[in-house]
Amino acid sequence: MTIWYDGALRDADSARVSVFDHGLTVGDGVFETLKAVDGRAFAMTRHLARLAASTRLLGLPEPDTDEVRRACAAVLEANRMPLGRLRITYTGGISPLGSDRGTTRPTLVVAVAETPHRPATTAAVTVPWTRNERGALAGAKSTSYAENVVALAHAHKRGATEALFGNTVGALCEGTGSNVFVVLDGQLHTPPLSSGCLPGITRALLVEWTGARETDLPFDVLDRAEEILLTSSLRDVQGVHALDGRQLPGAPGPVTAKAMRIFAERSAADIDP
Image (cartoon, rainbow, N blue to C red; front, side):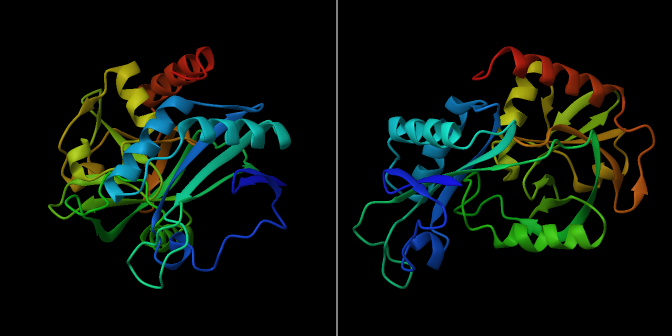
């Protein structure tokens, strides 16, 4: 496999990032995950805008957008595959052993790996841990992901592929790597960004394309929702057929199925909406 690191394409087995890189030692970095179909990355402009926004939240220098685009194109050209997970990682670079940043330039790594198509529905669980909607990293796609690793492992032990969080005030927030939507009285709703959820690219497109409402939702809305669905760059739109072991019959329901159809049609028509 070929990756982009330190300004050029390199063989993944020989590429080396410093053990003093701040992304490794303290998780000081941001990232983006893009869906790549037949060598073309989806929604690149939106992802690069969010990457820049995340760096501003962390106080990192903004990346060179042209370089990131070149890196993505080069990696996709060098690694041909029908469906890929394209990962852009951007860290604080070589720094002291502590929270202080160094003075070297940030580290940029771009890599891609083949990924399977997701099924139309999946199982999810809720977790007892909360998102901090007022935290310094709220809204940033940070590499400080250990909280998600723990929650996702919790989900996998229970036969699910996603774990759903509330926030500190008991409102529905998001999944470990997805945004969550619910159907109430036939209408699609999703938590607002003020809940502390990540400003997901697929989430934003689905809101634009379906008229879904951004609504403050109590966490227990999951118990009475007619349908539950997840969105992310690799899931696209995915129904939930079981939550905490409780079956949701008929998933994907009619609203979810319509949202899936709209997203598939609109995303196929425009690779960079």
